[in-house]
Image (tube, rainbow, N blue to C red):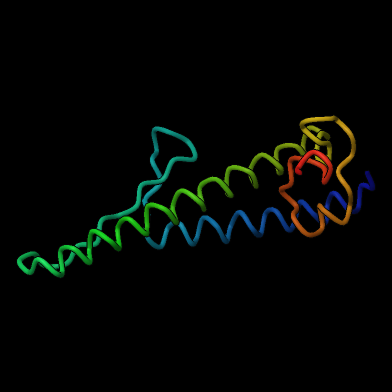
Length: 118
């Protein structure tokens, strides 16, 4: 794969990593003991009203789902960045063929080629 393209995609991945971490930090705290693990903060509103408590529980459930999705995406971005360093970036994890440039430009953290992703 073209060295300039890999560098360009690495910069995009680094920006994505920063963006994902910033979004996670807005509602979750990173677990210092387990790398890549985040814990959503429970909304801390006043107790007393059952309806408000139910809303808080629903909000927390939504945050947990969002946290999990962002955490997985961040894991894939970190893995892709690591692969740029050990020259394995752009190689399909399933068939070992080169991942299409168009796919990497659209989805830089792709782990599979288009054929294997089906």
